Length: 267
Image 1 (cartoon, rainbow, N blue to C red):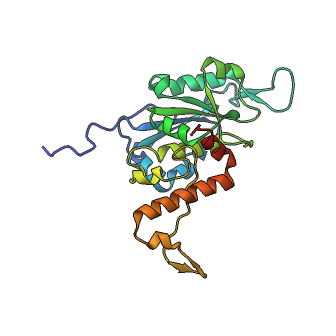
Image 2: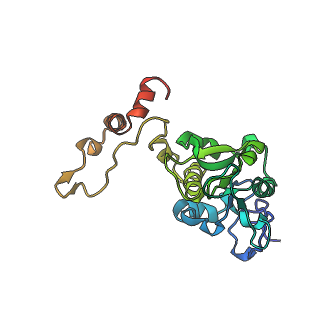
Image 3: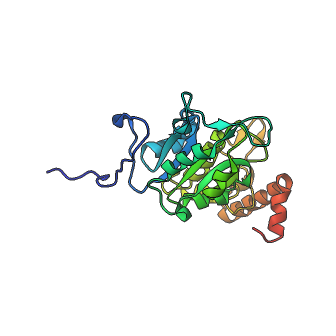
């Protein structure tokens, strides 16, 4: 009998609403961090998440992505998922009973809420931060509800105690782009995804406050501009001091709000 492969006993298979070509499925390692996305546009995924390091990690099973088509839970011939808002007003609202069915399906196989956040992408939510990405990366997985139209019935948010998170102070046509951005920020913090933990330690917001220092590489001279001499000095102490000073100056100039938090001792 041949020896088992390194992945022996580590693969897992989960149920899906739609038939899948198992031969085309990427490897799924047991216990891998998982993202479940409830959306009216499942074809929008993986999108950019399927490229570069996040895409490679997805294929290698270091994290998994499950697309849950909200339309499947709709009612009637046209699988309706929304209705006009009570009290009048423009637009349509995603129905609580429809979204609730999708959430119940998504909740199957998940761990306790403390280890599996359920999030609604909303411009009225708390701003997404690097600290939030790090928090999610420590969880077993996450369920994200992508809104559309005028939003979702408040009752479903209250009943499932869903956390609302915002990508920024602007409005998108739906939550799919925000979901991809937040998942990307989270996945890259998972073990063995980037392959170099030092990279994440030196990035902007790695300490929650300051921006990253400028970076340079070859050639040493380009269009009359030279690389700062300190970076070619070989003195690591001076390099570290220069980078720290540059980081602080950039933060003061470009994000005075963050610098104020640092000065107040909030960072």
